[in-house]
Length: 461
Image 1 (cartoon, helix red, strand yellow):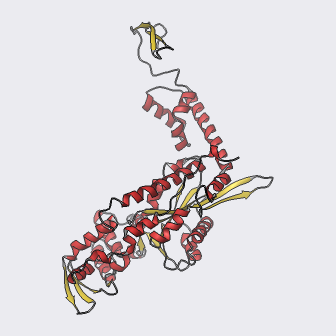
Image 2 (cartoon, rainbow, N blue to C red):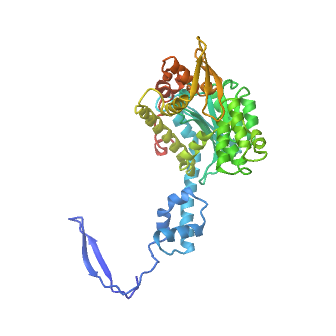
Image 3 (cartoon, rainbow, N blue to C red):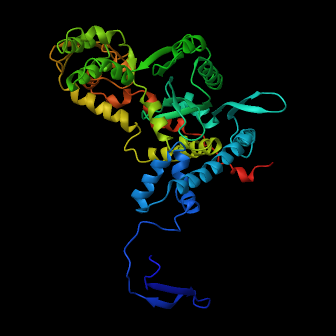
């Protein structure tokens, strides 16, 4: 406000009524609006924009200046903004150092056998640089709730992925994620490391192998993106496991040369084909969309989707901006709440089969209408499928619960051909859905809870 402007409002708080009493007021304005405010100083800015700087510690002064102008419509000088940013970063760095110093205390709190989470694995690795100076190297945690729930309620599929930490704490987060009976992510273990390389992946995978008793990885499928060195690490740590690459990332590389929605749709039809005949049919369709297109794809064809890891990384995005213990606690709390929420979610199901498997079942049921049945008088059926442009004849064995399309064996849900055969015998196909999709199995995955822990201020020194 201009010094010569007569406008004034003077008021004070009345102690008796707790209201404000206006003592002097002149409503006449004789000055123009200005975009400067003395109260918008470095102290105010440090308080008002602390959360944004914590999430984006590398934010430039000019970026913060523009943000202030857009939000407050106030002009603030560079020196004021620089001072506010310096105050915030000084506080953050103090928090970072304090939290790194208490990582061993955090580990001990998590490992307390009675009060918190019995059976949990938590490892803190540091490097001794002499004279009592310890430098952080890595942190690993696998809660007993996930360690117990995975073998009882999840199929033997584990996705591996890594993502960058976004805040002032640099490094990477390695994760091992599976899927529950409703095809939702089931985070198993996670670790903070300095960099993602063969050494850190070997250490992380050995920790997971020990906690889940994977031994040599027999009957286990590992899914991953194309991380450097991970293929070799998996073959060394889990030599009997089956390693698959993520179709989404293969598509990203492949579509650089072969663009278009029709090609993309045909790509996914090829990926989801469950037998050679169906794959060849879709490859023929794809081949008509470009010369050499199939040769380019088949070099990297045997793959599946790793979106469960990407879902987890996105789910904890906000936490990845925080300091180390704050981040780990936010992830733990999200997991703790998730277990309770998913147990309540099971109460909303209309039957004892998971909703996602019921959707697949209903889709197969619709497709089964196009099937023609021939019965051999025992357990065998010839099923003609006319859902594609070419007629495919499949063989279903009711006793072995197999079909030559392989979808029934791969998914554990009766395929369209199996449903047609089951209906031919006047039986209920739902009874042939694998136990992995039953509510009882689903609840086993979440039978153990993650227990809360007190915050850092409550820990013993």
